[in-house]
Length: 113
Image (cartoon, rainbow, N blue to C red):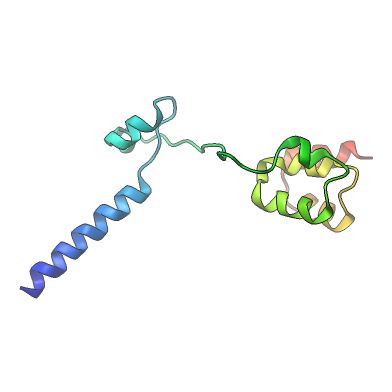
């Protein structure tokens, strides 16, 4: 009896893991992923953040508080080039951005000179 319970728990755990790792198919939307077609295709997509509070305008705004600039680079990595281009970004954050090796960030840092 215990063996049957263990097997049922393992099956449930595996199903839960499959639901967590299901992939989204590029160009076919979430309906395809929900139907299981995503796993068959082998394609994945990185979806942009939905409803993020950080925008390019905020990242570029010299009036953005310095603490917010530090949060932006952590919470919205796609905005790092804008933070690097912001003339108010403090030197330690510029050094950190420069150490990342991101070509877009490096180009923004070069444009500051």
